Amino acid sequence: MNMIVCVKQVIDPEAPPASFKIDASSNSVVPPAGVPPVISPFDEQAVEAALRIKDAVGGKITAVSLGTGLLRDVVKKPLSMGADELVLLEDPAFDGGDSWSTAAALAAAIKKIGEYDIVFCGRQAADWDAGQVGSGLAELLGLPSVTLAKKVEVMDGKAKVERVIPDGYEVVEVSLPALITVSNELGEARYATIKGIMAAKRKEPIVWTPADLGVDASTLGTAGRRIKMLKLFQPVREGTCEIIEGEDEADAGANLAKRLSEAKLL
Amino acid sequence: MADNKGVMILAEAVNGKLAAISTELLGAGRKLADDLGEELSAVLVGSGVGDLAQEAIAFGADKVYVVDDALLKNYRTDSYLAVMEKVANEVVPKVVLMGQNSVGRDLAPRLAFRLDTTATMDCVELAVDPDSKLLLRTKPVYGGNARAIFTSESMPQMATLRVKAGEPLARDDSRKGEVVNIDAGLDASAIRTEVLDTVIEEVEGIKLEDASVIVAGGRGIGGPEGFQELEELAKMLKAAVGASRPPCDNGWVPDTIQVGLTGKIVSPDVYIAVAISGSSQHLAGCSGSKNIIAINRDADANIFKEAAYGVVGDWKKVVPAFKEKLKELMG
Image 1 (cartoon, helix red, strand yellow):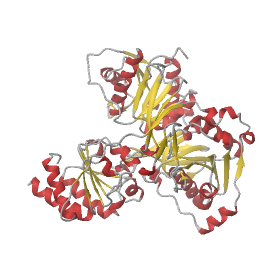
Image 2 (tube, chains in turn orange, purple):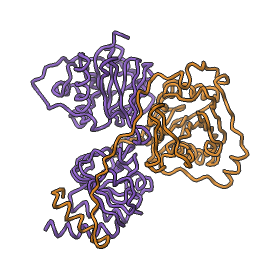
Image 3 (tube, one colour):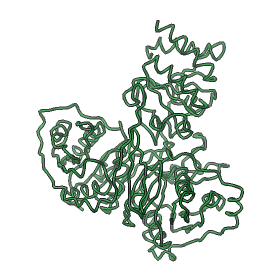
Image 4 (cartoon, chains in turn red, orange):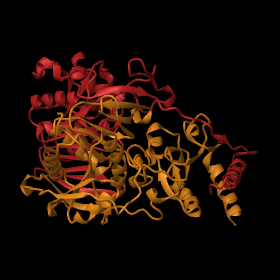
């Protein structure tokens, strides 16, 4: 089973909301000082989905990451979890893309990698929450797609996917090769092992530029954008919380009940 | 490009009625169509859904395209994609809207790439730019920490609308509209997925979407036992129980009760957030609540910025006393 997993380096979404800052003049996000970037958590879970299949039936996992300023310690995480290869699309030309230019570059890279049975993506990246690259890739590669997977199993050239719906899940069967996007319901991604970290340290990623992919730079990154961002802003929070106090925590709890009943809320 | 005209929404049927999100899309779409001075159409896709065309008109559609086919009973990417591609190519709309639900999340980006255009997912606001007449698509980004307004000249302009972000019009059964049947023209062999089973995980008690009071727990609840205590409180208040992501990811509670960006969007009268720090991604699901009540040990927790009332303290001490007092007050 040959699997490709697309992973993105993002600003840590678990960083405290107070540390989130934007630069309104350039419509960009200022990375918080002292908080290292991470692999987008949904993408880590996509790696986890691939590893579970590798554990069950064997196979090879290639992680692909696109961007600029990719920190090796960060983007090597899939390797330290158990992936076999890492391909980086790293070049200033890839920077500032939208779902179209990102999917176009990834599709070219996946074609260059060649053989694959499943392409995994996270359901959306934890930065722009665009939620389109997975399905867009499937369209560009002409693959069937199943999105929002919470469980993936393979057998007889097909994948059986549990797809999250509001009140439960659907069991969807798809012929391979296919593209599958992974949702958080899959469960926590595994930790890197010491052995994995050591192996990842020794492993050099393959780095491809637009020329290596044979794609026109005008379709990539900022140049390849089809959607324009007019404005980026932070919604104002009112912050008028009435804090209910008491002699101790229990008393405060009782006072809260009183206050809510006075306010006719309960 | 200049030939693209009108606003089109994808209408879905649930239990023989128009889905709530579809009436919300009709409300939002009506406003956009009026601002453009163009028509609002609904595409009703499914099996045995033709009767709902009149309902779509009553909620604001000028025209309803009905695509009724046994192969469209279950949502499947390939079949719905083929149908929407066909309809979009026949009608040539300017704007195509879907709900940000399990159908729209899957279908909208794929259709956008198929039609060589762009989509913006999970919009909370849609408007027509008075100058360019282009669709302005406002969406939360960075887990809700910020919002961005996007626009694009590629046609049709596509977006999905967040659940409850649109306001349905009052149903008016005297409204007149046109119903057009379109043949699905599907080739069953070209549908590459099959739905083997649909598993509904029933949650006991009141559904989150229907509840006027919700008691929700976060990571700080510590385990499934803690949620039993929240359930008792919920029972007293005739409330539904919700959770932020960590309790779901840890398996303390079912995934279906997750409130947030990747879970359910709720807007009860009262939302009691217990041991929930208030990450942006959680607030994305509950900030539409009329009153948020926060109980958290950390006085600096983000949830207090959204809350109307709060107690700073350990929920294990606060909640039992809160419950006791409520019992007394409720007689």
